[in-house]
Length: 128
Ligand SMILES: [Zn+2]
Image 1: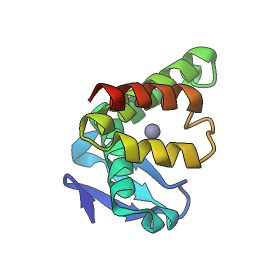
Image 2: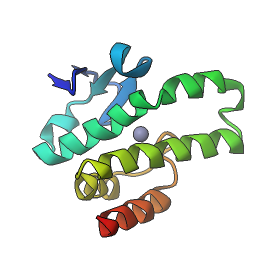
Image 3: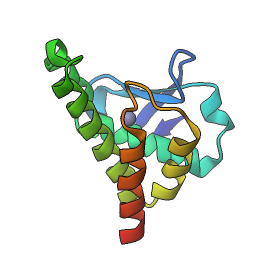
């Protein structure tokens, strides 16, 4: 299994899916059992979102700023990265599917500011 050449690996610890590693070449996407129960287009939307995290070296940036991670600034960075990954997914034509997934699942620290993500995705979908 892979997403644009990025390996997908079963990882029961993650919530749906999570990008791991640094950049497109050395990264991989961990996916949970629940991921495989989703419709194919929703799986694709999640893959694209995680691919954008790898493309943007988001994990490396979070590590670099680890001392600030639990501050308001760190939360801003996390939100900006989520919005960037959502925008990439929408630009590939899977915004509506990602929106459905986000609406169904609760937000947590790693999926911050659900209302803002929903509003941003709705705007991107309407603009297409
Ligand atoms: Zn994300």
